[in-house]
Image (cartoon, rainbow, N blue to C red; front, top):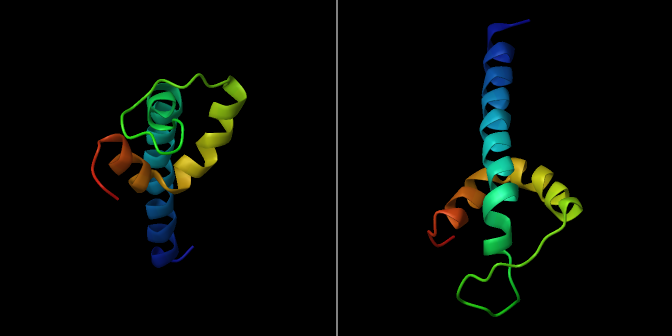
Length: 76
């Protein structure tokens, strides 16, 4: 494998690892608080099933920088 391919694979692996950590934390802790009824400005704890949390994980892994910004309360 060429050195540039190795570097690209390391970068993708680090991105996926960071995304996995953020996604698992988001699905376990923040998702019920951040995903509420439409038009509601203040956070409301919305009950979520395990299946709904599992469906959020792949998208949160891919878009983890946006998920982390939303979780920390910064505007997107």
